[in-house]
Image: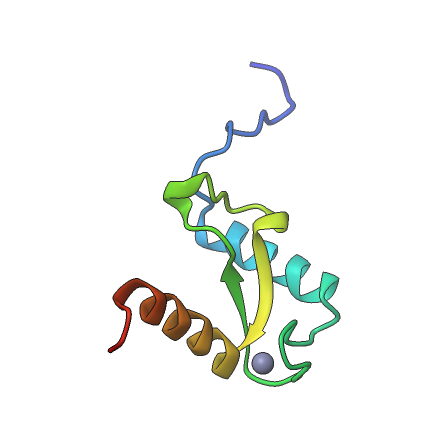
Length: 84
Ligand SMILES: [Zn+2]
């Protein structure tokens, strides 16, 4: 084996790698919710589900606060269920 450490080809990120990716996304988005601009209670949201070719990649992630994040999921549910 060589001394260089070959990176595994795109598998699910380990917790440390994921945390690292979150930091990258948060920094890219300026530590602001990309929906309302809040700078507190930030979370990183997957724009596409993993089953729809949604990778753990920077482009697939967006910074949202907890409120907008839950609204995003509520919206998805409403669209799916068609409230009367
Ligand atoms: Zn927000």
